[in-house]
Amino acid sequence: LLTDDDKRVQAAAAVALGQLKEPKSIKHLVAALNEGDETADAAAKALGQFDPAQVMPLVRLAAHDEDVGVQRGAIKALREVKSPEVVGVFVEMLPKIRLVDTESGGVPEHELPWGLMTADYLTEEMARTLVAFDLESRNNVLSQAAQDANWRVRAGLMKALAKPLFRIKASENQEASA
Image (cartoon, rainbow, N blue to C red; front, side, top):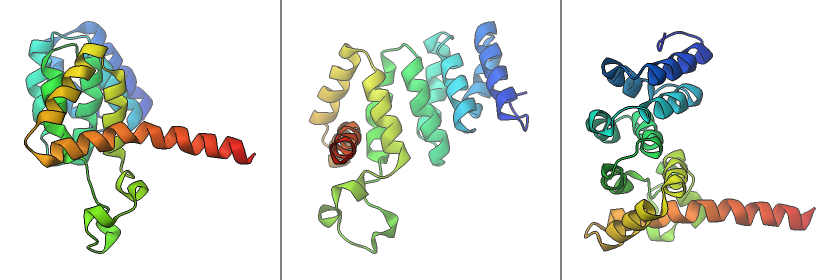
């Protein structure tokens, strides 16, 4: 049912598998993280019902998949799985945040407008996940990423942190002009 053409059926199947907590279904739920939003959200929540020791190895693999849709689903799963490992996987994913728009025509990253640099959906999922973490996990991410030797980790963190601020600022500007 996770491969049904109807996304509502897929999502319902993911919810049911989470309730059953059958370890054999974990790999199928991880595969469903690449489906549409409704199915991926349900699969991520279902993965949160399982023992983190069984889930995290597959979520880690998904986080390092070449497919951005699979990566995005892995980020959603990180919100739901309660394990100390999620912080490490989250930090490992920060360099995957796209720092330049592929349509920029070769303009160096430091010369691009900040709004263009924050336009991709992977950044949004990272920001949502960071906000969803408990305070201790969030502080661990900030500490690890800020001290990482890889500049892309630090840049990805800054981009993820900035994402919600742009939404707040945009909505304030719209209200002020109304």
